[in-house]
Image 1: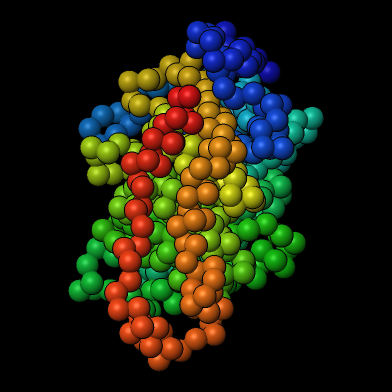
Image 2: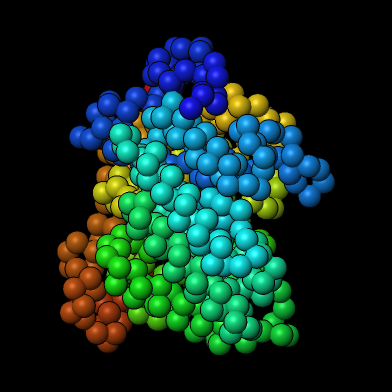
Length: 438
Ligand code: XUL
Ligand code: CO
């Protein structure tokens, strides 16, 4: 098979001084950081839909990039050309994982039986490609939001027939994920929400979503899937309101319906910011609940109120992300670049620049997060900030050995507490800067 990305070599690591646009400046897969190889800390993944599918179409204009990869779009030849392109791309970048929706892999037919036959054919082809490489699936998912049948949702649809269709797609996508060695299976509730409460029974819809997830877990376990299921929270877009608003909401939902043992979170940076949180916030909320599973690595634009899915460039955010990941002991999933080139960056070389940027940003984030932890000033400050709970009345509160009467008597005795101590935010921010640039 002929080379698709001609003139693009295997991307080498050349170090921070390199000016070669087709080289890593920070991502050095074998470098040991915090006791582990960088490549193990950072299981990067390619998103099939953006990298091999999205060609620049937006609401105001058509494709700018040519992603035909030499085949006619909408055909199985094109589906296979995408596989060829994807594997060449991943191998040139040293990426070990990919993520997919069912309909990213093949053109959807009118009849689901034909779509499934095409999925069998393409997954055989992918399996063949995987041989002799160490590339695997990170996670799979079903696209239950693009086709008009899902206009009112999938699990949350008012139509039981549509619910069945969603179940059928999820079943097949779980089969494919298992076949391709996937670590996880994602539910992103793109249309699981509402446009208006005037026509919506929220409780009914949430119960149905939970039923769909329960059935998916039961099926997955029955065919030997031992990985994690993930919810990928997002507060809005395409719907005005989406039920998996943010990590806290999704975790509450999972606990309410007894799904928390099988599910974790797949946190996407741009989704967290749409929810009015920082990326770090949703990572922390997931981590403290033991549910930090995987990450969709991208970034939004502070000046725009939608999901721009940009390649990550913000090293502060990546550093705080890696700080959370290191503290959580790593991910069971990985870092999926759910990100796309800007529309005017339409050449094949731009696809590589984008991944080099994203991988270097997270490599730098990892290095700086490890330094921040090693430095210890931030962690030590947090530790000391709660010191009043280590002894005396504080220790009794923590161990649950007190009563409201006892605490009230203690307060009476005290008269007035001292101020609780400075938060030292500006000092801590300067510590972060000194680690970033020191
Ligand atoms: C959409 C989004 C999805 C999910 C998978 O905002 O992030 O691509 O990652 O369905
Ligand atoms: Co995503």
